[in-house]
Length: 311
Ligand SMILES: C[S@@+](CC[C@H](N)C(=O)[O-])C[C@H]1O[C@@H](n2cnc3c(N)ncnc32)[C@H](O)[C@@H]1O
Image (cartoon, rainbow, N blue to C red; front, side, top):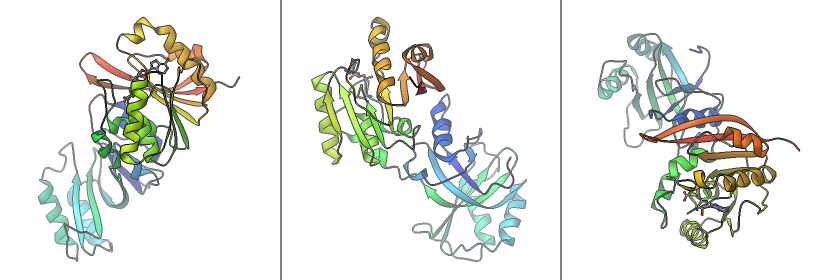
């Protein structure tokens, strides 16, 4: 517990999914606990989040829920037209969300407005404390509409996952996906207003990415080229490497893509079906972090965040 911290965020809780915590740390500076709650240094970029839900200013904390209700009652928080939600994935309060909201509503001297609240509060339950906070930032969920893109393939990433990958390099203003497929990652980059470069050596993929971008009215530079040699500079590479049979049968190609990538951008976020830290090392990168996401039994995605070594 960090008692003096006054900003917290709640995140999705998804088993075997390190990307949730990684995105949260990258965007807010805090790592979520087992209840999906993190102390945040900043809420400035919560709106773009994929797995972070709410960013809150803490109004009261207590060791028990009853004590929390007393503290809220004693606070002079402005709650005109309020709504209270509950984040209690561990069922620590022992009451329904409605019962929790009613307890708080009873001690707040204001009228609620569930449909159009001016103040949205969340009761957050953690292992060692209960928190009452006012929501001051929320994920806008804008990535969701990209799941309706006209084109995708069996290896396309979903929009939420793609958004979180881009959020691992939140200060980058230009993004290159050298293996863009149908363009899931560049859709996220472009929709965030970043300069987006997409490359694929298959004409069909280039066509899909262009159509998908045009469908949403986004602008990006889409090129048909071989990323083992094609040079395009950007602040960061974010890509899902070719795999299936390819990564095993054509390791040399993937290594060549990494080697070329290390000369194109100082940062790389590489998704692969195995730990490729040693390949990254050989290609000229220092692996900063590796996150795993289990998609289903027997298939795990490895997300590597790497920094190119200065030459
Ligand atoms: C795993 S898929 C990418 C999927 C993409 N993220 C999506 O959501 O649709 C990898 C892509 O890399 C492309 N690729 C493989 N080798 C390549 C190379 N040397 N240069 C450029 N693209 C390559 C493949 O054509 C394929 O579209």
